[in-house]
Amino acid sequence: MRRRELTAAAVLLLFGLGAVSQARALRLGSVAAPGPGFFPLVLAIAFSLVSVGLLVTAARAPAGPRSGPPGADAAGRFRVTGTLGALPAYAPVLEWPGFRLAPFALLLFCFTALQRLRWPVALAAAAGPALVMDLVFRQWLGVNLPAGPWGF
Image (cartoon, rainbow, N blue to C red; front, side, top):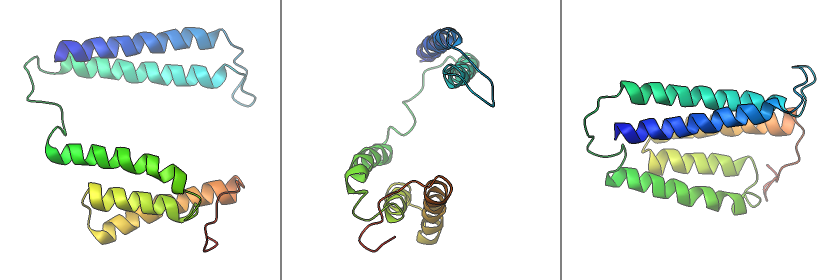
């Protein structure tokens, strides 16, 4: 298992370094006026650093075999299946309940059905990001988002 993790991290690092090489060929510009290569370079460097972290973690891991991947039990499969089912269903129904209610409902489903959080905690945890997304996209950026039948 350790050899597989080391190989995967090394391949990811090679991809990251290749992306850094390609991004350096583009004009960088400056932080105040970024060029077309600025963000690809920053992202490629960040990706490479994460890959180095994965390499270090894999190298420091014990060499013995593990019993299985984390979350391989029935509860873990239920969470993965529920998430993979909820996310594709979210996009087509986004317009009907509106942008304020749809992310709240998605997060509430994830927190209650998949993570089994208590209702007060789930309500607060779902309301916070939904309000922040509304503030960022509607108020700050002025994006016209679906309002839903209730006008919010």
